[in-house]
Amino acid sequence: MSPFKTLLATAALMSLAACSSNTVQGVKQDAHVVKDKAVEVKDVVVDKAIEIKDKAVEGGKAAGQAVGSGLEKAGEAVKGATN
Image (cartoon, rainbow, N blue to C red; front, side, top):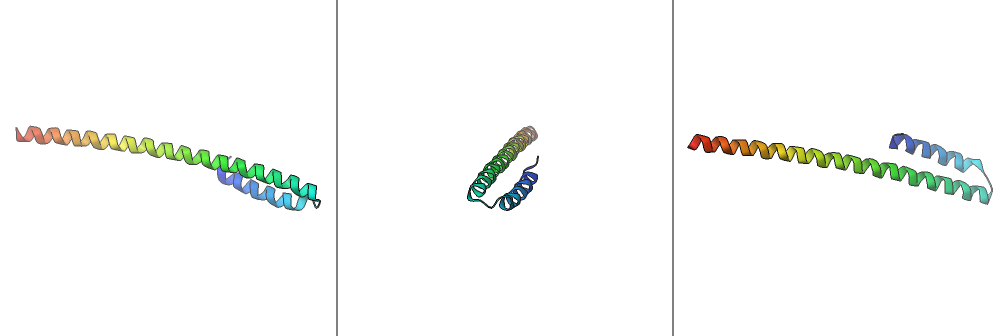
């Protein structure tokens, strides 16, 4: 499930939790359920952010290698032209 769908599900759960009971014990139980869901959502969002960061780092490394290779070839071409 995508993080955004999980957030929507959590919001729906929070709404249901608010309406599901009218006792103090029921409200406490609902609050625990909502807290647990919020922790799950946070974990999903953090995992996704780490995944995106890792992909960005990989892309940056690949771009750096391509630029370095291009500069190296350009340097060799200049060296060959001046000899």
